Length: 359
Image (cartoon, rainbow, N blue to C red; front, side, top):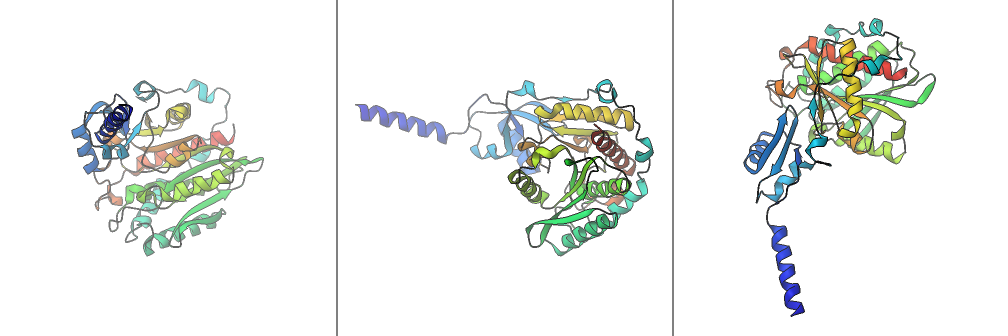
């Protein structure tokens, strides 16, 4: 009888595991691929959807395979929000210094020229000859500005770049700005995704080249983002093993910052770092014309490997409700971008770097 009961128990357990998920857990969707989105709509109940934040419950007998596109939300849906609150009084209370002189040196034309230059490579698909040419070109530009540049390669033909300007006082403390250089492989495309982010980095680097920074300023040009966050995961792992992640006070990721018609930028992070996103919303209110939305529940870009390792990280990305209609398509061309908007994002991120450097 004991064996019969045990056998029935094991059979029931097996049947329970082989059926599709049946639970009341709340999940965040972490894929924006059209095929995944369509499949998820058929098997989930939407609880909340705004911008890049999509929270769902699984319907009964949903295919187990869907779980790879979902992230369980710790603490449930109440711990996640999509808000536009601004906290400006706390941000600048003890910081009377105004950095508009430096910020006003940012040039729309420079950003535009860099986007056109990067978009003129036949493809920036990671590992391609053209990707290597683009990466080497960015390295030369950063070196010409006086930055120390090194390559971090996850494959002989696919390298990320690290460019640094060592701090004069707190040189072990690091402020990092990053963006990916690779594209999905469409010919002469990838202007918004993500030539725009790399171009803003190059312009920020130009403005900061003669700035007397207290902390170390680091620019990270990642590769392989479109293939699964390869370069950023490699670098975050490398820093973790070297016990250097604790030295990073803030990471800012730029991915798709060139298309918008509403003047809204999303500040995306995880709930434990909401305060940093709120701080950046305050920076935006003081130094830019941007409106801000805060999206809690990061996914799909190079900020994720750093957030997973406990590093304060915020992604600046165009408003997903007003996202580029040419996302991951051949029509993602430089003539369709809003360079005034990209320059405002540059102002936000440069101001954030300057303020962090003087905390």
